[in-house]
Length: 263
Image (cartoon, rainbow, N blue to C red; front, side, top):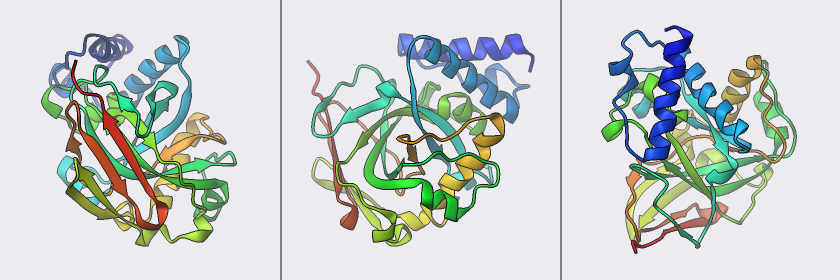
């Protein structure tokens, strides 16, 4: 895929953000697109967003469960960027007018206290770099029509990133075994999903290690204060105006996302 086609694909995805009208899968529009093209298309969009004054505040890792990897026919996760305007306060009404087809997932969030740069990052180094973890809800959104995505489409589309709601109860890694922590996701008071962190590459810290070692060769450092979302422990749930979601994480506390009602 030549540079002009990659620039065109990035322009179409940026246009979908602006118009709130999803586009056809890139794999249909650009049949010659390959894995490496997808990350370049993602970077073209992020570069333009940063040029407009937005700031990278972290990263998300997706496709971390065996079920999702099998569904898309891949054997590794993917990643996207979290920008400053992706973060919303819990309990405060969140407007729905910025997303096309939003869904939500519960995750733990790593907050870094030290820089982390690969390649060669070990689990021990990753643990040392984490200041604390928070309960989190990730809003995922696709600029691809009807969520008809494969791995190349979602990577190109910033790993289907949409937004983040962080809880306010920090926990040190020394105080908890993340693998054993489970989550119950409630939608308007009804349980809609349960899961445990062991489903995230066996341990969410593995997701952080993978991310650092994947972005490091491109010169990217995971910075202190940055948030890393390692992957969901349940299936995505659709969001409608007026919905309230609560993720109960036991020893890690809980986090609530309230979505504004339609006017």
